[in-house]
Structure formats: C-alpha cells, structure tokens
Image (cartoon, rainbow over all chains, first blue to last red; front, side):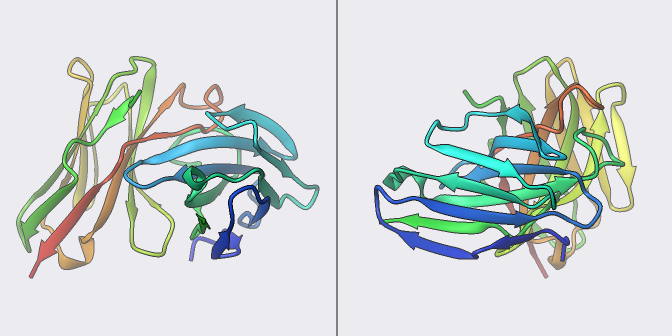
Length: 116
Length: 116
C-alpha cells in the first residue's frame, strides 16, 4: 500500500459525459501528479500540482482540468468524453516537486475509466 | 513522439538466471533515469534510479547501467525470482532536482515473467 488513494476504482460512462477522479496523496506529500495509461502506451504525464498551485503541464487535453485543494487532495475532471479517453488514470504524490532518489513518487492504484 | 522506448514488450527468464531489461531514449536533455515495477491492479512502485553523472547504480539484486553516448540504459536483475514477474517501466526526467518539477516520461513497459 503506497498510501496514495484514488477513487473510484472503476468508472464506466458514455461519450459526451463528464467525470471527476479523486486522489488523496500520502500524508505529508505536497506534490500531486496525474498520469494517463492508454492501451499499448506507457504512462503519459498530464499535470502536476504543488501545495495547491499548478507547476507543470504535459499533453493534457483542453477538455481535461485538475486542481489541488487546501487539504492537498486533487481532482481530475474529464469532460466531453470520447472513446479514446478510456484508460487507466494514475495519481502519484511526493514530498516536493522534483525528481531524485530521496523524493520518490508514490503511485496510487489507479482509476480505470471506460467510455462507451 | 516516443522519447523513451522499451522495444521488448515481454521477456521470459528462468529462476536464478539474469534478467536484462533495456530502454532507449532520444531526448538528450534527460539527466535522471528511473525504473518502476508494476503488478496487476496496483500502481507502479519505484525500484532504482541513476543520475546521468553515473554509469552504474546497484541496489541488492538490481543494477542499472547507463550508456549516455548510446542513449541507452538497462536493468539487470540477478538472480531472478518468480516474485519479480511484473511489468517494468523505464522513466526519464529533464533536470533532476528542482527544474523538472517531477515530470517523468515513461516507456511502454516490458512484461517480465520468471519461471520457477
């Protein structure tokens, strides 16, 4: 158990709909990252927050948005859903927004989104 | 544009033998590299990392080798155990420390199966 929780575990919805994925980071971690893993793809970085502020953005679609709240949990909002948005969405957290062996990113179990 | 590539989708090894997982990258700005391990229904977990100023890093049964001129890294597992069976992801970051904000670029993963 990484200490990062994600809800829901599974989500099935229809095209055109909007969904919200939730992530609670490990206790003490201020930085949250969102990644998308589509079929046959590695994990693609979407967006990163640190202490409530957006710090880095990847190839995140305009239909997607995220935020980090004062209690440090984060939500990823996906709207106008398309079939191609079906994927595993992972949240990760770390103490600070950097990459090093002493600032490991801990990943949650993921939310599997299926768009029908 | 796949900046991190794991060209072998799968690898099968006998217990006790060496497992060698390979990863190539194209972005010369990458200067920190990581390996993650993923079991089904779980998020990736950090395994081992290496900075671009080194060519080798060892942690128990796991050793990562970096060849900067070839833009190639490899993960060696010796001896391999059935519990090592998982998906292994190679990841890279530009600007270790504060400049990358923790953004990781992942390969597609290699499924390692270790047979008893």
